[in-house]
Image (cartoon, rainbow, N blue to C red):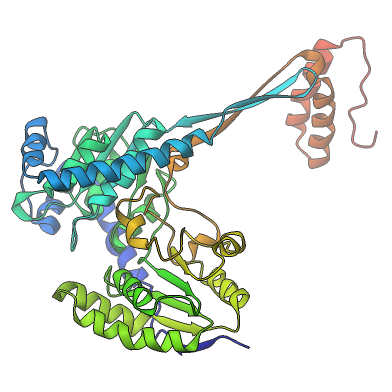
Length: 435
């Protein structure tokens, strides 16, 4: 049985890349040439903010006082979960030393980057969780200097909850600036910031394009598009929960795809009938986003069996993948392409987005085919080293000389030759390719 689309997307989650690219490139060039004055000018234009850009200790303390204690407790709970998971990730990365052959010793070291810029969205929603996800993992990785950057919300500046979360999780500086100008300021080291070695965190299409253009001059976590989510559900799934979960992710934005893949047509039809009703009950902004996402980008696919369901999911390579089906271990072993996996009705993408501990900065637009999400590993450089005794390097030098000559790289060959002649002056080596 071929896949049957009960609902097929009318649009795909792509931006007007040419126009966005030209706009972003112009802003970046202006800021690189004009420095802090240009960045501040763009902040006034786009953020509509002319207050302090770098928050001092008194400003942070004042913001902290505005956060209700119950929210502080929730942020602390989520931070602890994120930190524990990040610490386990770091523990999985080991330095090692190996004697490949007698006298030839090689090794690996993991070294954190020196400075990270963590972008925290603050437009339609205050992304408190993004501050925790990006800053906490950088801190656990051992990054020496961490800047959190978030758009101000009008004249009041950055949301107090974002300030509190970034401060609690270990940000060394908090920059009240959004969009391309915020990314540029961290990259170019404006306003007394260290030049970032890596820029991480989600953002709108302009932030994503800025990261794309700057990649190479600075590291990035990934180039993210609109968030996307896929649910795999069989006949045992609760249709109401499936529908609620789809709507919960559709509210992210008008172009946020949600997909349902099932082998039960009755379940699919029940969910399709229920989703519009759930969307209609959302607050206005959330309702507008979810309505457009469901109408234009959502898909519902019926498959013959669970193997076809899994294959379909791998083809889509979703950012978030939920399984509400029997035999969860089978799905865990079988599925290969996803940003983060949520197994069973008892968990949901919303948990991962906010508080359970796994990172919510994840690959979108099919990028889960080749990469995972933000983690401690993204802040770490895996570097190698070697040393050798003269006897240990002897065979390596002979092989290097001959391989280099075969490739036509005589200079490389001579770097090996000179050592052999110095260390073994009485020996005759046949270092020609023909020999």
